[in-house]
Structures are given as C-alpha cells and as structure tokens.
Image (tube, rainbow, N blue to C red; front, side, top):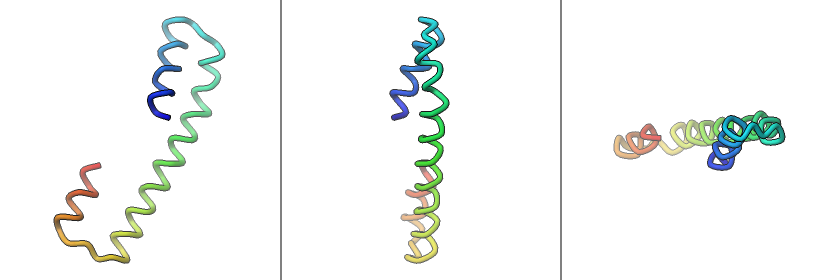
Length: 62
C-alpha cells in the first residue's frame, strides 16, 4: 500500500497525473489507519504479555 502511494505520488508529480493526485489522500488515510492499529496492538502486547527487554527492543525498532 505504501509502495502504491509512492508510485501514485511520483505519477502525480512528474507526469502531472490528476487522477493519481486525487487518490493519494485516500491512500494516506488508509496507511495512517493501519499504522495506528499496529501501534495499538503493540501497546496491548506490551501491557498484557510483559515482554522481556529483547522483545521491547524488537518492537521499538519499528
């Protein structure tokens, strides 16, 4: 999805593709939604599973 958004941004900018430009905000909202969902799931994992330091380093790397 992020790669598709990048391609659309490239098309909008360099090829002046207005259809691609209109699609970018919709893709951005979807990407933001997934990002927030992943953050929430990570916070839940940290809270409920009491991970060890190695697990926390892995989660915080992303």
